[in-house]
Image (tube, rainbow, N blue to C red; front, side):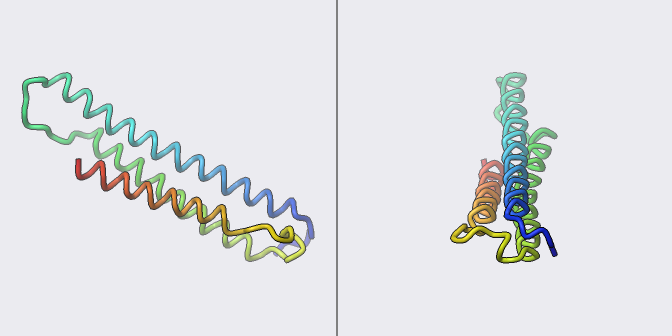
Length: 121
């Protein structure tokens, strides 16, 4: 529990949450690029091959997308844990403490949707 009675503690936790949100988005984007680049290279190298096989880049890309979704969920969970330890004086009046975690959870869900899309196609 914090004894600082300072709203900067809350804002620091929120900045950390948003930094993890950017990290999760970066991991998902990197995974998407790896997966699609592998598909692109497969199509260029085997232009006449009608049978498309999933290579290592497919699984590595999916792994990065899944890792990004897990980072988004775990950072939202960690943020909620920190906010529960703060005193009411450390949270500004009328400020929503749920917006950041909600955004992270939406990013995680969209990451899982992207994962399913890449797996199906």
